[in-house]
Image (cartoon, rainbow, N blue to C red; front, side, top):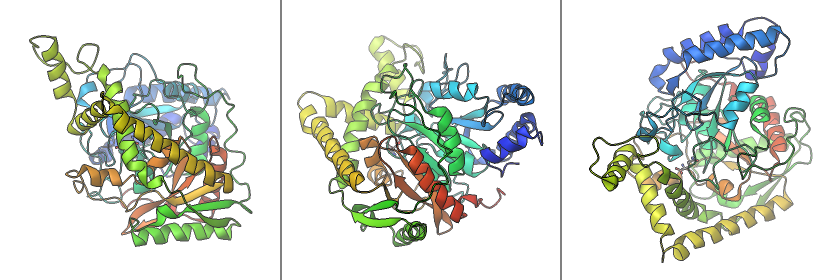
Length: 483
Ligand code: GLN
């Protein structure tokens, strides 16, 4: 059962071939069996079985939707009522959210089952899942490699068939990069498409939740539930949600694909480039037209992001003060001691580094030199995208410069770590939708193809990606020991 997709399982459930309780029990057993991968921070066995029971009732009453009874798991950044929501941090190790994130609420209403909460980089800051307080996650394809981050637990759980689908969040690549490293499909929607209410904030102008699944067809089903206006999120966009499944098979004849030449420079490992080029050749066979485009400012994405994201995080994380909730130090001497020790003990070193950089960049005298400059660059990058996306329908390129790197390989060098997001970050700065689909292997490790679209053009992205999965079987491969 665990090798089936959401779409296939939904049919099986509705035809009465198995129950959601059986499906959920099977997945809970797999989670135990593969606990060495360290994907889950919390497994909600009792709640999952209770949800499955309700789902079975809905199915037998003929009230089931496409996600009813499907076992999913959520990145531990989404608030779940009465269930630990740690955000991968010691700071929130003792935190049980008093309410559900909108995304969680919507999955509950759709009758989906939540298996538990997934491991992640602390406060979503990282590219390898190694900044998690709960320890690193292993890449199911190679246990000595990282799964990517920050949604590393999500990508690993889906690739290892421990959950049929998962949620992730993407501030600078955290859905697409781990999806690429683990050989699954990951979609980062347009900024404002999916509610951020109850999604613990890292960099509010960049954060966006999205689905991580084995197939594009499943991503469409999950996005259908996640997307839509939410009055509780002031940046949520009030725009109708199209049906993401109907156009999946539309013809790609005449599709115009732009290849940003900056994505194919010296940084890209030659074998990676070959995989991406072969994937693009598949599109030519499907009738698409490929042109080279240029985005001259895109190489400034990493420096701009590493001012803007830390600036926003330094403001967002000021709420974790040991007073309201989260970790509090023992026997504080006075208020200052309480703040200093609670934050000093609760946050890990990457989070502290970002808070320091962000506070510095926002301080008087430096604001104009750093933060304002970074915002100007952000505009130039958005304008680059605007120009090329007025000439082509979608952009394609690599997701990462290399396949999954080794555990511990980059932890000593933050800049090296930051560079692994060099092809994903610009999309967040511009607020565009993009996805990663499996496109091949290098050194027996999965490689992703990135497809970037125009604002709110998720349906087209899904169509373009789905057609590729109809022609290839990269997305159907399973890591050894997982089948
Ligand atoms: N790796 C990037 C960072 O560390 C992006 C993280 C993310 O998308 N949440 O900030």
